[in-house]
Image (cartoon, rainbow, N blue to C red):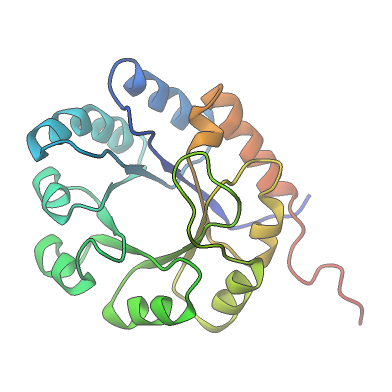
Length: 216
């Protein structure tokens, strides 16, 4: 069994009401998760903040980074650990100015090396590539290949996140290619969240290390 530094980056479903706070706690208690992204759509900031607060407490109690999707304003209101920006959700510089030096700022870069390098130069803390597989969570207009992860991790120290249709069954090549984080949603929330977290932990630990089978 190989050791890997790759970690889970858990993304919320769009419906985070009802019993979801209990499901989140159960997932985070099942195994190591580095970060949780709060992702809701078509809600005003007040409603989103009310839904976010119990989830943010759950993450804080377990030392899991709480990241807000898209909204710099909501991230600032909540005092979140960071924000994840799509290409149309604001600039890294604006997020840094409003959220401070300690905020974790991530940027969606699709399958573009150019966008990733731009994000790094602007001061992002991580870049996200994908989709690597068809997604149950959102339409996938961009498709990324694993060699993008290898190229990035070989040349840059900035962490990279792989996203898009990732499951315990297909994640190993992404880990081997150099992904620092696997962003997952439906594969966890679409079934038993605790068992899914444990399955990801096993699959990531079993993934071959890059170059492990290369000949001398």
